[in-house]
Image (tube, rainbow, N blue to C red; front, side, top):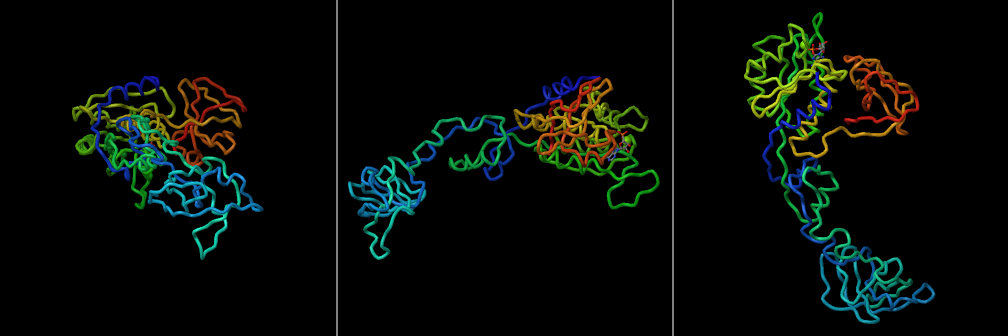
Length: 401
Ligand code: AMP
Ligand code: MG
């Protein structure tokens, strides 16, 4: 039985590289940059106004006030997207708008609200307040200098990073392709939702749980029908799934029972079992298999075991395949509102609920089939073997949503 870290290292170290592709920035959200991206231009690209108003020479209006308006001659107008070819001399100004380039000779913008003008004569304006030199001016390159690294290889494209690259005029970026992920549920007792349950049957729920998690990790998901517990059916299903996908995630059928066919069916296909069993609870019977460059992630069938092993072992692989540098779950600090115990000899990933103040509660029944507590949970706490954490202890909550 492997420790979790060793299992994860084995999984990630062996993953083959996937090819890269150039994609439109419009579809790049949540993808991972395959290369460092360098700023091709300065941002802003030119000095410009942050206000609607008048571009002036600050010294001309240094004494301006409501009681002491300073009258300036308006020599022109520059809208956003235009440029002004002249130069402002003493006693002159230019009508300007947010984002318009700063005319030559101007060193400040007086906001429109601090001016008074006659709508019939726009050639003159009264300035009612002083401005300091460079007030309301956005400087060329003050946000980003050309040549600055913007995004490192392996970083995820967030909304903010997409915005920055769009402002830089980048239309495409290079990313690693998303792995194709097959999802299979095994078990003769499983029924599709909407069907009538016969005695002893249950509704299949793991595919619905894992599907959004696979997609949010970047996997291109292909969901397969339920596979009954039968050696040839299992083998055929795996063969079909491996033909189409980079990895196959199965749930169920990896325990020690004589009705557990995933491992033997995978070997019958020519697959090699890399390891079986990880020292965690829930999720001990997880199995990793290799079929050439493809991978089998055999999750146990109990819903919480399937979720926990997916989050701790399969999700990092889907991310690592895409070149992601960060493959773990988000960690949030918290304080236990009640004691948590792990009397067992494996790490126990406990379902918890943490509130807005970081107070962490057990989410309810911790058995690996219990879904009420999963529905109530928003994270997991990793409890070491033979440990007792008292109320008030600081802890780390692992989050998947
Ligand atoms: P197994 O790992 O196949 O031995 O399954 C362990 C337990 O999880 C059994 O009670 C199964 O009925 C249940 N189970 C297996 N697969 C699923 C599934 N896809 N959805 C809901 N329960 C499942
Ligand atoms: Mg089963």
